[in-house]
Amino acid sequence: MTAARIAPRKILLINGHPDPHPDRLCSALASAYAEGAQAAGHHVRRIEVGGLALPPITSQAAFMAPSSPEVAELQAAVREADHLVLIYPLWLGAPPAVLKAFLEQVFRYGLALAAPGEAKGVKGLLAGRSARVVVTMGMPGFIFRLVFFAHGLKCVSRGLLWVSGYRPVREMALGPVESPDPARRLRWIARLRSLGAEAA
Image (cartoon, rainbow, N blue to C red):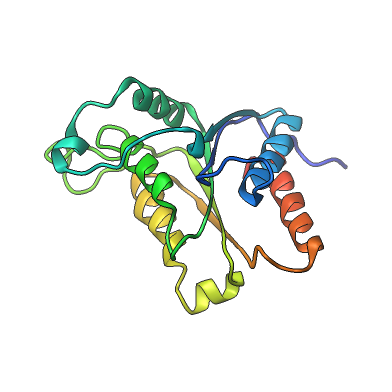
């Protein structure tokens, strides 16, 4: 008996590494996910954050201002996707500054949350979508969770995506990336390819 085929989904795949070179682990993981998803019939749109030039938000006025055409196009991609996958490295315990600037620019009021005064309390506007966050790091993943409480992951998975309405938001913490065991990297890549096929 064969497994039931998963209905095709629209996937937005974001490589959040500031260096989009294909030799980077984040790029390899993103490519593996995309390969698995496309082979299974899912539709994948990929964004390379390192190839963009979005400045950080520096004031409330800038955050509330209308989005630029470039940002509006990125926001449209977020709205259109059924499933969002974000892959990034942990730098100084947090997402890289380039990725943070991307998130600040794209996930503004009107996309992620209702603006103050438009709803009672906090209202996420991206319900009906799911997400996966994959973070790579120099330390073992279990140390990241047990000692550091996965703060550099939770700030994105809970503080941004979950609040915006994504359910479920699944997490992966992969490390150490400099492991002398090359089979570890191959297992991670194979796992992302499998997850892509499942659109999970």
